[in-house]
Image 1 (spheres, rainbow, N blue to C red):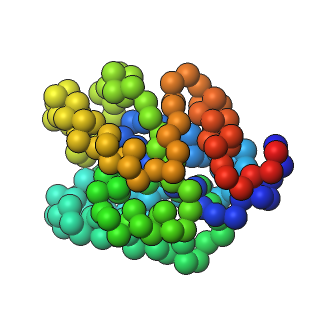
Image 2: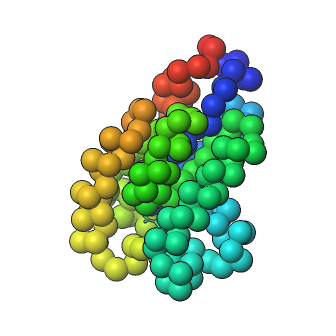
Length: 174
Ligand code: S3P
């Protein structure tokens, strides 16, 4: 694969635990691009944990912060790989911004596999129950499908997921 041929940002969307950050970092390294994680940027910007931003400032304010952070990348950074939060696609204006300035990739992963990994981690909106994540999955799945340019599977290895994305990129010379 040749590098230096990506002219737009790559935004990774999908459920918490789908592998957006892990796959994103590996993809960025492979393509020699910078990597940004929207949750991490919001924590830097606010000096608070994601959990505290959501609890004390509310989900609407959090969605606005996601928009601001992505705007900043789009305006000021060279084409990069951007891992979004699981709920970033809930904001129409954020979806529009991502679609207008990049390639949106839905990272799909079986909900059962997500659950296997997630119970070891703390995720602000997912700590409740298994039913909750199933419901979230059902609610969000159509949205991820609708907003993405392409859907890829994170079913086996990180390397395979990265390859799938690279194969799907519209403007990479191979
Ligand atoms: C959220 C997902 C989280 C984080 C926040 C809200 C959501 O990101 O942005 O807790 O609404 O699904 P990850 O998908 O990286 O866990």
